[in-house]
Amino acid sequence: GGTESRDIIILSGSEQVWVNGKMLTRGSNRDYIIDYSSGDIIFTPKIIIDHDTDILVEYQYSNNLMLRIL
Image (cartoon, rainbow, N blue to C red):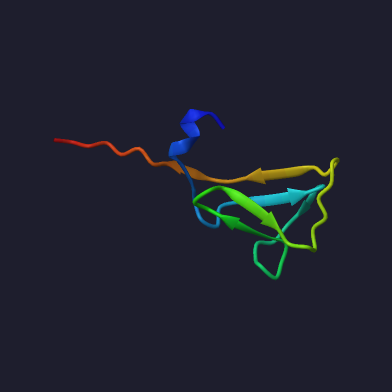
């Protein structure tokens, strides 16, 4: 995203990932793993990704901005 995405934190376990209409399962011995701090999704060798693969990811997030009351 743009510069505002630096303050976004993906909520652990909130993601849903689909590849070509099939919902995937998180886990290193399943379909994918996710690095919540960077937002990177790494697909396991079971999932073949090529130039015409449709990938859809839904997730909940929180922004990292906190109000400071003095």
